[in-house]
Image 1 (cartoon, rainbow, N blue to C red):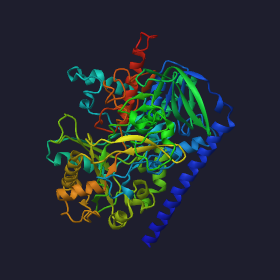
Image 2: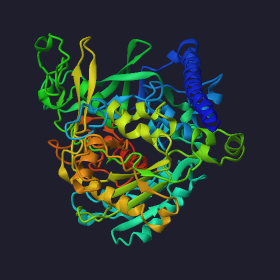
Image 3: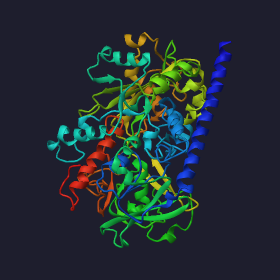
Image 4: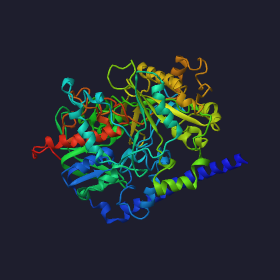
Length: 626
């Protein structure tokens, strides 16, 4: 009888997921037509603005809110379903969208997510279909804050030692970095977790029981929430009175940066004067008199630069006739039917990501109450909507750990842990399997037998990976331009060594008294492709990491800051693109290296630092204070 009940709950879950997504799509369609078709303000855009910001995410909106200029345009490719400007059903849509536990349902949905995919990986992702990793990244006003796990964690002070000054002796975290974190935090709603499981307590208590001097801290994270609801920079942006004079253009994709005249000599200095964008199938151009600020993220920003002719010269054909043949087998080294404007070889290079593994690695002998048949109850609904508490406030991660191993020379931690109090099999393959792109063999032989078993994941994270990838572009058959994402996961042995160390520490962790009260053990079934190695041996863990390779969704570095035009894109003192006047970048793409934490907080810190730099370097303003 109990299995019939559970089957009915799973059926309800499947129907709920479908209805949830259909409603959000219908809601957005209504708002789209109101804002873009029926509204007379949809086309009320000026020909020229003081400042144009490309990207309405964390960086873009934080910068916009801090600008003194009122004549500002924000161009965002995604929808405006979170904004008060969206009438009719938007309020109900926001209520549903902002339920934290619904976070996975928002990822890899075309409405909210760019649905990026990597190239097939040679050294990693062997348990994923075609060795391809899915990279969710938010699309819409609010950016990735619309679909992320809401974790807020500052980076370690040693992370930024050489970001802004090559002379590290001059570095002072308290003066150079911390004030800008605090300014950004005034722009946020930060909260403690309002609901945790027994595993979270065991995770924190296990740290001293490991008796490992390399352990820095195990803790519960802060989250960006307001009364248990998802919160994003959109909410604060609209509360700033002066932003009402700014123009926010949603559902408009930037296609090219406009420059002042023909570059001619590719060594000549350029000046960015506007943006060409596409909206409702039509191309438009808009001008900027003071600045064009790119805040499109680690993938969007280099893609726009490359499409605009700023990048490595071997990517472009000076004669468009050379690329008359349309061939989808082109690689990142093939020429484009675009004109080179500025040779900057580092555009798209130095791609880094927090890589992880360990999905469903740990089993329990008791339930945490997060199964669909336990979760969907009147009590939990009441707790969430009335009190802002309960499991519906959970965004996915309820524990963070930081470890300094002997593999890393910096004082910053190099091994991290994320505690996920549920397994990917909790929905019996309805949704999570597709989101993670787990291949057929791995699902059937490894994950499917775990459906009836309570599982959790403690994910080891390489905080400072040495593998480097790239972002590039290539022509399609219809002469459009596709983005190529090649992270080259685990191409450096250091990254594998850190993951193996993390997996071995997890094995030790679950045998501490804190975890043993929950009956924890490793999933004993060997991962397909690794059964030839002795279970829990270093060779097994190396194979395991190379098969079940996962992204922590934190790519950075594709337009890195630095002083040399040969290996960087942005001047760290001004945030200006090398050799291009009035063109600035401020988002995760400019980070020269990975922070030792979720990068969203650092993106906000950079946005506030940019504002100070921007006004300090404006010739018409001697006041750098905001």
